[in-house]
Amino acid sequence: LISASLFLIITIAFSSLLRLGIASVNSVNKLNKAIFKTQSKMDELNAKPIDQLEMLNVTTFSNGQGKIMVIPILANLKKVQVSYLWDKKKIPIVFETFRSDE
Image (cartoon, rainbow, N blue to C red; front, side):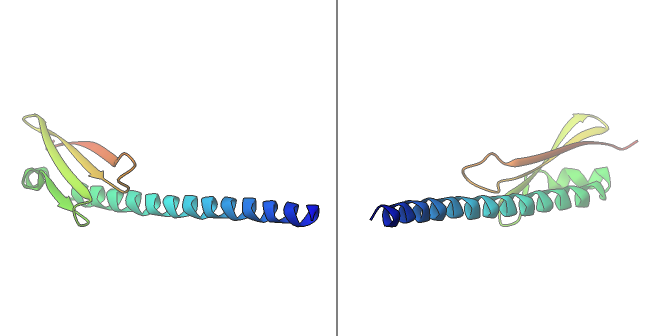
């Protein structure tokens, strides 16, 4: 009886840890995909001329999960911000860069 109870407790503990591990792996995979999408969009924007960035201000990508902001700092300097909401319970991923026409 004691060994059966001990076996049951160990099995339940192992099952719980396995579920936590799977949830953690799934979360990391989701985060990696989000980082890749955000970095890809940032690379795409970096390839564009600075005068084309202004028309992309406040646009979205990936079904509205990603957002592009182009903020003028000076006459020839703009801040480009790409954010991606990868999980509603987590803070979004944000990549920023500054672009100048010189």
